[in-house]
Image (cartoon, rainbow, N blue to C red; front, side):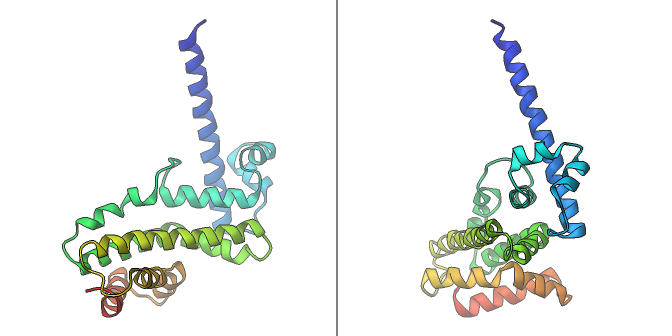
Length: 208
């Protein structure tokens, strides 16, 4: 049995499947952002990706599931199953003081908003008619709170937290929400202004 040849076939099929998945995700992202979630159909996504509707349904299952995958890939930048803490948060523990750690975290949040803020807005708008998206939005909020908790624990380990860590994590979570960051940007605030304001607010309330 030619095991090398079989392995090559498996690898090629996996590569083809990944290319198809990315084509669907790219097509869906463009359509969702251009025409909105409600106006986008699986048929349109399939046509733009150059695949059949059956392929989209077989791989993703539903339009809501497509949006979830678009969010995941847009947020992470790839299809790898790698925790977001390993994509930038851990390095903040090396900062010398609370101000530097907080500024780094806020910039991290701003980068997330830049990439996926519009997609989260679409999910929030559509969750009333899409139960799966309601759960998805809840998951996004939960993951952000988990990230805030991870960050605050790192700050606390260096003696930078001046109140109960859970309350401090709540404040970080609230002040780096997609809604707040989006509103600040919509008012014309620069990222530096947003960072300075949030850092000052958090230091006055919860960080040494």
